[in-house]
Length: 59
Ligand SMILES: [Zn+2]
Image (cartoon, rainbow, N blue to C red; front, top):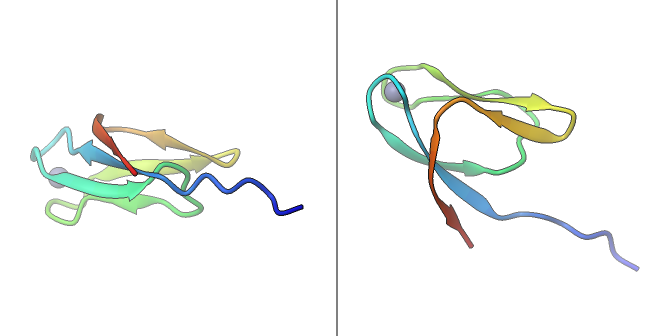
């Protein structure tokens, strides 16, 4: 039995600068915008607390 791994990605749009960035749906560390440095996601109990808008889910 292997554990179910949810490894899909989401594309998140930065609220501050509009940059679209692909990140894990679940993160273990904070994720910052590559362009302006704004916080895009915080790890919260194994799930991402996404600050930006999810543009699309990526397989
Ligand atoms: Zn940004």
